[in-house]
Image (cartoon, rainbow, N blue to C red):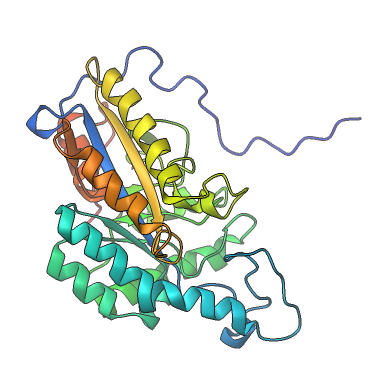
Length: 312
């Protein structure tokens, strides 16, 4: 006999359908482009950090058990020692803003990231405490973890983030806990649309900015779908061209996910630099996720009687 888990969260298979909102992006752009640079270095699973196991995904798939994995730790350290500076140099030259998806434990290890983000005007979004899924996490544990993340960002960055993105799958209560905590404009724990949308909890409407796994440099690691920097460039440009065509009728959004230890390697970085060159002059609005969220809240507010925005 088939056994099914209880349906804890209602699923929406329709979304906007054939009638997406007709709002306009700034400067008549057809596409809002969101670059997200993930900083997880120092937040990976490591026995030496007191975690129950070592991380097994870096340039290779390898699980070292019952002993510190110094090779894995070294691969992650490359992301902040070399990759971060190479990637940020490319963003600086292109004059493009970026949202930094930072794990709170990683921010503790690299506080200078917050200082540089303030200097450039980039957004710091919380990527959880460490680089882990929240699926199956107990509610008390997750609630305490969210509080710990917010306190860490406040202490190191000077302010709490307004965005949240769990690695892989959130728990069934993650979004509710974020709403109840207050202070969040959006979360990115969804992969189901090309546009922001609202979900409701009680009398509050909460904004979701979907993320993307396909226009993401992790495909250099996962299944090795990308081999050369040009593969990354070509795939992302295919997505941009398709969305710009659709953007003639209604706004579209695209998220490009990056990692300092992945795209920051010398054999891959020109995929990002060439992408910036190919995007130049196109009708695109380059924005942080906070900027996109603020624009959506102003120009496409949730239906009455729901209230949206940051709870004071």
